[in-house]
Every structure is written in C-alpha cells, then in structure tokens.
Length: 193
Image 1 (cartoon, rainbow, N blue to C red):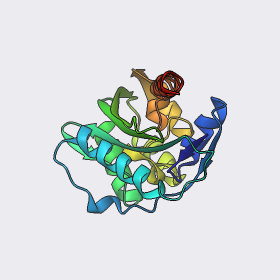
Image 2 (image 1 turned 180 degrees about the vertical axis):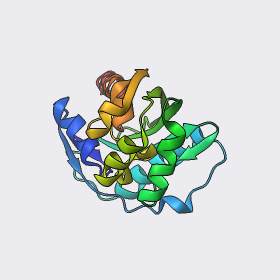
Image 3 (image 1 turned 135 degrees about the vertical axis):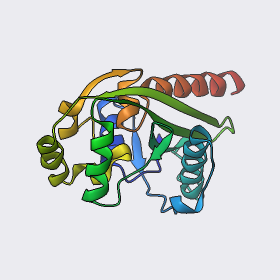
C-alpha cells in the first residue's frame, strides 16, 4: 500500500482513478523553508521533505511513501500558488497565449530502501484569453489552490490550449512515472525476497 504525503484532492483523485491502493497523511512541511535556485531540484527537495515528514511510524502494510510538489516555470520565473486573486489575475495576463513548464517533483520512499526522486516536466500552452475570461476564472477561487494558478482537472481546463508531455503530471502526479517505479520496486522486492 502507498502512503500519499499530500493534502491535494487532485493527487488523491489520480490515485483513485488509477486504482492504486493508498492512504493519505498530510505532511505539514513549511514549503517556504526550503529554497533552491534550480526549480527542478526545488520541487524534488520539497517532495522529499513531504515524504520524509510522514514516513516515521508508518503501518506495516505501507510499502511506499510518496511526496509530490509542483510549480510552473514561466518566462524564467517560478510560479507556485498565487497569494490572492490580484496575483492570479496578473499572472494570467502574462500567461495568456504563452507557454510554460509545469514541473512536478516526485519522491518515492520504498520500505526496502530503494528510494526514487524525479522531476517530470510538461509543457503547457495557455489559451489567449480575454480580461473578462481572466476575471471570471479568478472569481471562482480555483487558481488560488494550484501551482501556476490553474487547475487542468477543473474549470481551468478550458483555458489550456495544449500540452506536451504527461497530462497527469500537470494535475500533480505523473501516473506513468509512478506506475513504472512501483513496478520496478515490486520486481526488486521479489528478486531480493
């Protein structure tokens, strides 16, 4: 069984859709305490901190702990969750018609000790939307809960013109990556056991 170190309903939903048995334990990690100038390393460090924070005292049926963290890299600037509606609207004015890289750090701590870290990147092409559309979206409150200020699994889906890369990664968890590392860790466990 997998332990997800996340409060994200979107990540939880992805695991449910993929039928991966799991439990959830929120890490409570202070993300502002972790800094790195390299966005790819930053999301991995944050993911590892979250997974590590919940890994002590886990039940015997938990074979792996998964931590994730996402951010948007747009024109060289790192966008996490917007602080408020004003910041979300300002970002959308910049992003409309442009493209950015959604980076998700993944940290899988496996009981056998075969830990895996990865940063998965997906290129996101934003639709050229109007000020009225920006205001309507920001008013929903949805952008305030998501890295980059949009939710592909929500109302923000209609504001995305296209993707290059992993769809589920943009939602917060690369299911192809997770499937692969879980499969590999099961093979490692059966080979050593």
